[in-house]
Length: 492
Image (cartoon, rainbow, N blue to C red):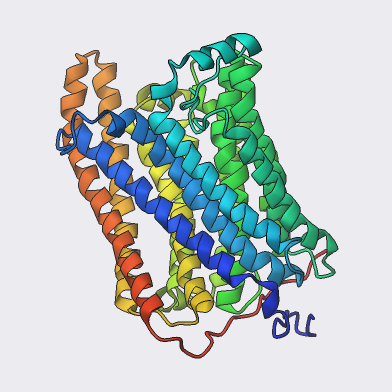
């Protein structure tokens, strides 16, 4: 029920949350993050000629680069968001998911999808010469590939794509039913969730089907660009921001500063973000009016993000000490600061003048790590730091280890992003001066060496978290950890 003070009383609704699934999804997410970071370290070592595993084809950088990105997107982020959704949606709607059986099926099926993707990427090319593959391709008139598909972030093998789409449809069904039946106020978090369920299915279908089987040439490039960015803007961003609108008011014990401003951010995201993707393909045969539109939309997104940041700063106003004393809040607001920096950087780099310098350089790689790890991964670490004691019914084993995790992760990704951004500028100037390619490679070595140590710092933070979690799990069960109630400005 909702009290007169606008607080949702969850005392009779603990059974709505499937805590076991929250825990399982988080653990799966951490497993895939560990694999992804090891893959990233392997590639970083190869670039500086320190790789101890040279000559092993199955550990080639080309394959493990795809493992690195796909394990983050579909293994880590998707699992973590599914765990957080199983916690937040029942509490916001006061209704359970449509089907517990479907929830458990989604968990197992999604792990199968991620693992099948990894198998296809690593060993798929070895089976590509099989005669039956060629026969099937001729019979259907489509060039099937048992390995990775040739599209960035869409490398999932063709035989995985239909299964993934079914899984995304089941996710939408399982959470949309309680949202549609809810009699509670429609808080902005649910706006973001509803949009994400629709957008993610359409984005995945667009990127993994159209460029491969329907369109070609510059048209395929335009769709591929939309897919690359929409995967971030229409899958990761709405779920990430939606969960921030849920957790921050709970931890600060005060409503969000402005519900109206939160909706400005939502509709701004919906209108401008889908147009951004083509900025990945400036100076290409894609029509210039589409490139100009992508530039304008990208700059506009920075203004949209500013409204969201202002809203959260207004919420924190007067509670600044919480940033120091409350670790999840520190994760959340650190991620917000990095999000603002990322979008400011993006608004700069998509201008045609600046793009001439940094196109194809490590500037873009630094930008990607800043947003995917510096923003969304830190947000997820904050959610896990808050929720694990509540689903395990145990206090954290060591607050010092939790602090080490925060500082190693934050400083590590900060060093990596700054290092690669600076390295990208040097690379751009090397290329612009028309010096031999080897000059830019040799000049990049100090930056690539720095990246190795920054990545090891980030991985060290993860190891602190995993050890802390393991020791927490082994510790005796304590009294139930209190679960704060959502605090919201009611809105319909």
